Image 1 (cartoon, rainbow, N blue to C red):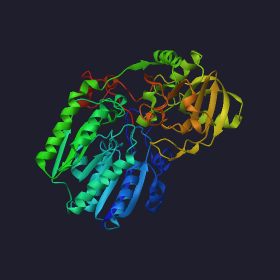
Image 2 (tube, rainbow, N blue to C red):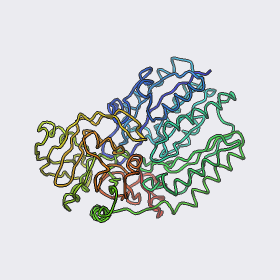
Image 3 (spheres, helix red, strand yellow):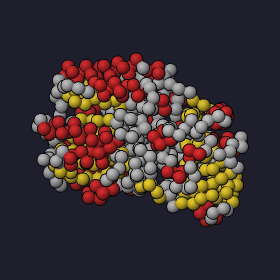
Image 4 (spheres, rainbow, N blue to C red):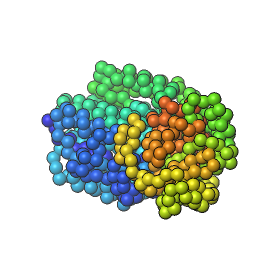
Length: 501
């Protein structure tokens, strides 16, 4: 039996987003547990679809003792503040340095940029390596959209990456990471004898990277086939370009016991990805075009047409408060339409003050100050009110305790709008249902999400249209003013690149 320290800090950084990730954001509950330490960490993450949970469960099943450090996450946004990173990493190291452990397993995102550090995950791994020494295995589970740096590879013993987008396999990825760590412990190794990394010379547009369909689905199926014999682990991290760091983009990682076999697996997977480069594309709609097409399609559809408001997706650093799609739905007098969740604490508070069935005049959304993002001033009827606390029901969130803050369901004409007090990606039907509205009974749904909504909406949706509306989660990276020359070159290469998690 080994003593394995387990913890995590998750943040996906969009440097073009309007808000930083402060310590208070990490400390608050959103779709995931708040910052939690020690035994409380074990209680908070229990039963969640999180890598840390899958790792803990698997390590215990293998007979190991879990030493809890801390776990926290913050909704994707602009840079993590120096204060937040330094306080959280100090807490983690304080616990780690005060106890003896045989190994460390971390739940990281892999695309964290801080105010004072371009590679937050790499720096955290460096500090932990310095604390436990070179002879202690350090494993880390990463998001599918991680930007894997050379420092992250060098300071860790192994990196394991999610294989699904939407990320329904987060807990399963944590368990896989634990299994790889077990191989090192069984063999008395601090690292695998063979490691190979390969980097593509193009960007994979995450808005077109859903693994429910090809080409991403086929790539990850092939990846699974290559894990055999002396190849113990093989991953593809697709990258998050909006972090605007030099090592952003797709990376193949391979681990095992034979250098030739590991190198061959990495090369074979890279070749498969490269031959599919041109397949990472799809149709993007302007707002007016998208609404018109949704109206046309809904006339004969058996389920709702979903408008993915990708560029204002809080899961990629959006503010969740743009209103352009809402305006167009109202202007076209669309009936049985649903929009949400719009992040506007002031509007939600006014609805609560007015009460059910009241009519309120408000300027909804448009408070983040982003270009092209203006409030929508109108009269709205208050249909439902909630404290914003409920349990998620879809496969990705898997029963997570949600907290949107004061929440309301408003109506204008035939359009209903879910309004919350926090920016949280709309990826679970419970986000509408807790307000008494059934999403799958609507004709058109506009969601603040890009791909993750598919984990719970896919089965009832008749069609999905990806919409270009205001927001910092750019779906065409050729329009992004990158500071990194490599990313600027790749974005201008002619490959349309987008980003969302």
